[in-house]
Image (tube, rainbow, N blue to C red; front, side):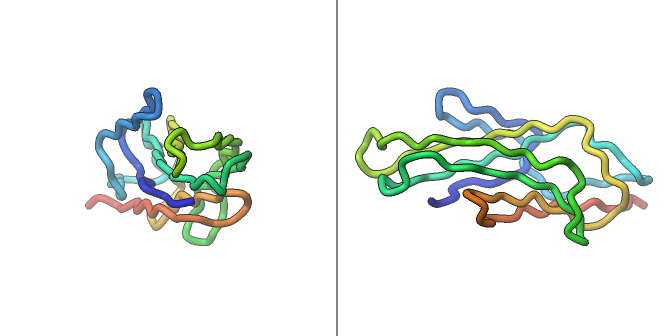
Length: 130
């Protein structure tokens, strides 16, 4: 399995396996904390080889700098069919978030796990605006 895209964006959608992403970012400015971010999306595009057909589990966690989960993990299953081209199958995961609460400034991270194994981390910096 290879991760082709793993990003935080203003908006993303999967339309018949075509991934559209608008406005990627990795930091948020806030005058005071706690703060709520109105809306954002984590978008991921993965490529699975023919040897990886079958079911797989994914988990997406949002953690703070101490490793504490700030929201309940997003979990799901994906089923990889025999690739139509005989080589690989691409899968998109799009997770929309509304009103994410951040208690303090600092580094946060979206962590992606496939079949229980950590695959990638996506940093998000919450900065105090002056």
